[in-house]
Image 1 (cartoon, rainbow, N blue to C red):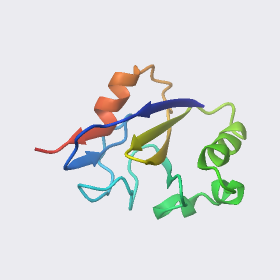
Image 2 (cartoon, helix red, strand yellow):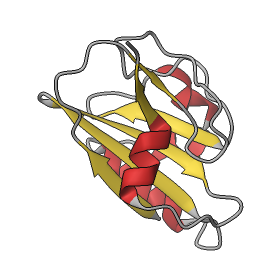
Image 3 (cartoon, rainbow, N blue to C red):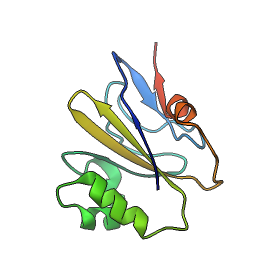
Length: 122
């Protein structure tokens, strides 16, 4: 598991994209909640709950206790041969987690991942 953390500042409207395919995911332009993924998207969750379509991954859901990171770590440990990228967004007093499968084993810097994943709208 490769995990990166971002802390966006002073944002208004934004879109979220798969960092590997650049496909836009379905989210409202002021929310980190994903309604439908795109590209190599695996899951999304907030630190307080399993939201949106994380339910399409029953395995993560069964690991849910009180810590989303613990559930994600248990999930990714079951697939050591897969290159899973976990993006954590810390915004205000909330954290959101997103998982993507790096099928081509692309070597992206944290800055490049952030630039590809999070796009502020003007």
